[in-house]
Length: 256
Figure 1 (tube, rainbow, N blue to C red):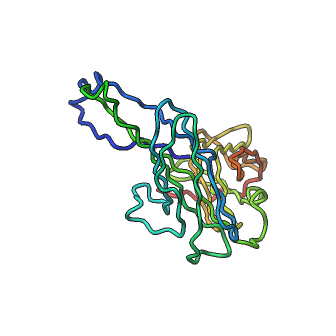
Figure 2: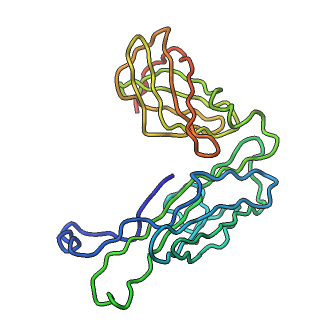
Figure 3: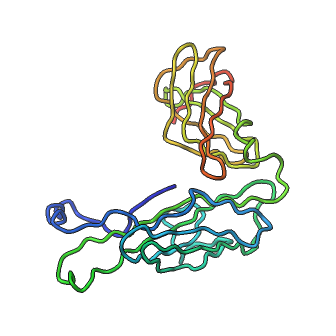
């Protein structure tokens, strides 16, 4: 999940003044999943938003195509989200309905979108109307996968079919991974072990259907017959699953 705070841009010279302002920096609205899978043929999918704060919250929800700067007014996606704006009282929840509107999407692989939830805090009450306040709007984004019917294979088997190769990029060790399947594979950790040396990548990444991605490694590792890659990937429920695979021989250095 991508978490961002929006709505305030401050010059450095204002820092001392802002330090005197009361600030609420905790998001109250919690999304009930870390990803959404929309299986083709379903009339809709639902997702629960819960307000775990102590004040009412206003939540705006929409779907984008991957542009973090996209807003509901300037994007075009084959989904509608209802309600697009909802007030959620403390300790209450709101169910979002996500409906595919039928525009053509690839039938031989998953398509990736993002669900956005923007939480706007309430205005200060009358008892503090004269005080200075700094308010933040919190925006969360989670992946939305549209999964066509009758795809070959299964999402749970996709990670085991990844093809790994040790390489170098910018003079540093890296691992290249190719995804021959019809499913996206989200990786959270990668560890390469060879000849007693270990190099890791722990920033997280994703490899789409038919795509190849390169992940730079921290540490030193050499090409050896016993080279293995250990990785963690996320299933449809956001659960972490471990995997292990052999490595193809290293390729020539790539400068980036």
